[in-house]
Every structure is written in structure tokens, then in C-alpha cells.
Amino acid sequence: MAREEFGRRRAWPVVVALAAPAVAGVPVVWAWSLDRPVGSGSLWLCAAALAVGAAASVRPGRPRDRPDRRPGRRARGTGGAGGAAAVRAWAVLLPAAVWGTAFATAQAVDTVQVRVHEPRIAGAVVTHCRVTGQEPVEGGGLGARTYGCTYRWTVDGQEFSEERPVDKPYPDGAGTRVWLEDGGRRMVTGRPSSVAAPFWIVLALLGGVAAVPYAAVRLAGQVREADRWR
Image (cartoon, rainbow, N blue to C red; front, side, top):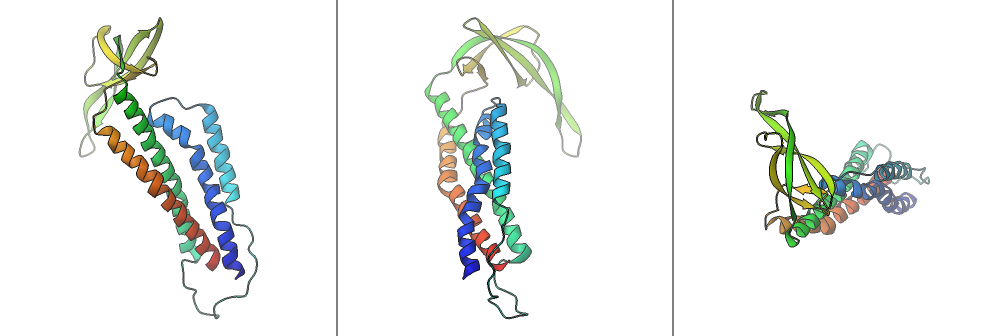
């Protein structure tokens, strides 16, 4: 019938349109997961993809067809508000699956790199320690203070700095040693454990092989159902 054929033709283009913002957001999630700055170009790309996806997923007019049920009898299926709610739910879960997979993949790649390549060690000076807040306690109160200090180090004549949380403030100008990555530009607080790499690799594989395809198939199915009974 015409309406079933229309739903089949529209389902996967809608999935692709809604997946476009998710794919465009992968570089942003990747950089955020590794505490790296996000370029303005990536943010503009996400905004453009979101606009394109929203426009492409708008439900167009559907070819008319004779009703396939008797008057007064409710159609079977997930029509009406329930069908629309299911489409919206899977439209949210699909980007979540894509971004979760991107996060796990970034962590897996970074963990393997840190474990395989011995990080560079350099001397650093700790300055500008300050109170950054207070830890929340049960019952709504505030507990112990939290602190942050700025670490400064030099690599090949170029100075770098980064603020990191600490358990207690250091005396201003105290010396310490830090692990570095990205050619000495970023500070590493500690090396990941031996089980971290397999953990993130498994999560990334599960996301790419199972979660993302499953969410895409379910979204396509819900679009077909919504178009069929609407």
C-alpha cells in the first residue's frame, strides 16, 4: 500500500538526517574526552549539521490512501502520540550511542598511546594554589575545601602551564616532576592501569558493533510505524 511504501522510503533518510549532527559532534566529544580545546570550526560544523538534520527530518506530506481499517476501530500499532514519542526517544538515543562510542574510542586510543609510549618527565614549579570549592556532604552541607594549583614547566625553551586539582595546596614556587604528552604541551596526572586499555576497547567495540546499529535500526522501524498509523 502507498502509506507503507512511503514509510519504508522515508525511514532511512530520516535516520541519516538525524545521525548527521551526531557524526559532526564526534570531534567535539573526542576533544572534550581528552581535556583538549575544541575549535570553533567544529562547533560551527555541529550547528550546521544540526540545522540540516532538523530540516531533513521534518515529516513531508504523505500520499493519500484509502483507510485500511473500519470506522470506529482503533488501529493496531504504535500510532498517534505513542509513535511520535518513540521516534523522539530513539532520535535522542542514536546520537547518545554515537557520542558514547566516540568517547570510549578516544579513551582507548589515548590509553594505548600512554601505555605503549613512556611519557616524558620534566621538572615543574607549582604556583598560584587556591581554593576552588568545597566538597558536598550528605544532608546538603559543605565539607572539606578543594584546591587547585598551576603547574609550570619548560620544554625546548617554551614554557607551558596548566591548572590541576590537588589534595592540599603547595607552597608557592615548590618544585615537582610531571609526566607530559603531546610533545610536552599537556600534563599527565598519572599513567592508566593495565586494565584500562582493554576496558575502553571493549566499550568502543560494543558501541560501534552493537549500540549504534541497533539504535539506527530501531529508529528506522519507529519512523515506519509512525508514518503507517499516523
